[in-house]
Amino acid sequence: MNGPNLNLLGMRNPELYGTATLPQVEARCREIARQAGRDLVAYQSNHEGALIDFLQQHRDAAGAIINPGGLAHTSVVLRDAVADCPFPVVEVHITDVSKREDFRRRSYLTDVAANQFIGLGVVGYEQALRWLLANVGGSAPQPPKDKS
Image (tube, rainbow, N blue to C red; front, side, top):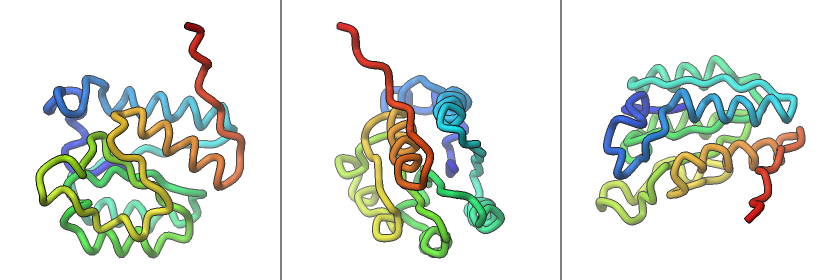
């Protein structure tokens, strides 16, 4: 799940967020899930209520990864929806929000997320997925070894 403005990934502030697009990130994660024998449903919305609706409509999921974008710092209701999930939810932020503006340093999801991957770029999504696969069942395929 991806929140506001992440539909512009690869175009918006590439110096902060990189040049990979959201469809590219989703495709890579979908392949990792496929290799583990799992399905991945990707979703993005610029609307807080739509994200909450998506979580509530997928209560049968094994787990979720969420990059809430700026809603991490403002949305108590999104926090409550994540807290109510019957499955683990992993929070991802592409940048290291602890080193950005003061208002970005607190995430309302921190205490309800099963884990966080912050400041790893878009690779954080892959790391979050591998963690989730390892912790909800299914084998998490490992990244290829560096041959250098």
